[in-house]
Image (cartoon, rainbow, N blue to C red; front, top):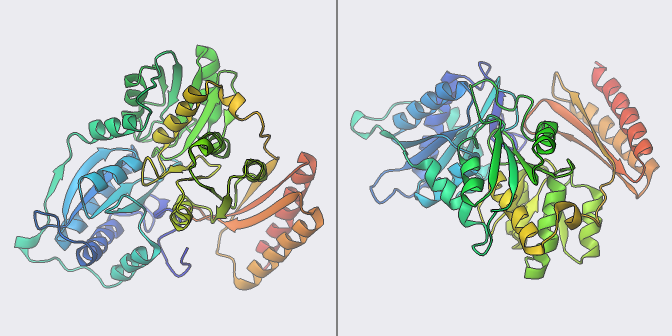
Length: 453
């Protein structure tokens, strides 16, 4: 990530609603700045206009930010299409198939409703490059001046957005299979998947029990979704369901639960799909710096090439393109299947896992029987201020010293979050007691460094 950028993190712009930059005034300027960049870089559509799609999750603040972005884009001379509540990957899909210049999603993903944010997609349905995001930031500083009246942009609603995306998701599941004998619990996190996900799985034949599908603008991700997998675990056991599928607020993350209540994270689901697809010669797999070491060793045992990227699905995507591979993901639940979609998609990822179960005639536990994740503990240290160079040098030295002491059967990772004011301290390895002691000791030492004036 380009550290010189002020607003863009690893997944767009995000923050607390009402505080800069998540304000109507900033969003109007952002819309104008982005509109000007898209006008310069995009070929006009066949109608001779640059067009941008805006989608959002179910946060109450989405109405306010949508209106501000729309005004800024129109003031720059860009036409706007409004998709309403739609999963982030649905916006990426519609941007591509409608042949638009860009897509914008108003969402703070797995964060609570008090937060919101903005992420952008290119005309091809992939995350914008760092360079284009930097161009938008530069344009923000140039100010805004409305173009002449006859060139102001128009806006209209995409009335069939949910239906189009539902059909696309279904098309990624093998035609020779269906879900007709499965009872599936689906947790939509009171978020953007609340309309699409139940339709996809039920139309493929499953009996679907839905939770987290009553958004009120303030309950998104509240004790539900991928951050709270116990919610779907309890419902799966209660319903005696075959499997549970849980999404985050904007629908690009995935957690699954089997009939026994075992919770499977993104690392495990990626391994299940990739180890099955090895039979189809799908190439290697991209994980991140946070991918569990047991997963890496498992791929080595299967002679499947594996590389790590920086944390963030955009960096997984870049590494996939670099290697010409199609499968990658993160333990947090992002999974990218480039032979199915241009970006990470929770619904489509779930369908790929279900396809593996159908084709292999195995349970999820059986598909993962050869993999036992190493204990991996993560401690988040909240930062009141950005660490200075001296502090970062001392923090890195503490991490290196801990890694050297633990040896090659353990990993230590210290990194700043790209979406929140947090320093993440991770240790993993063979012995849980050793990992717990190392995380606690290292985190305490780092906190002492941070407190020093």
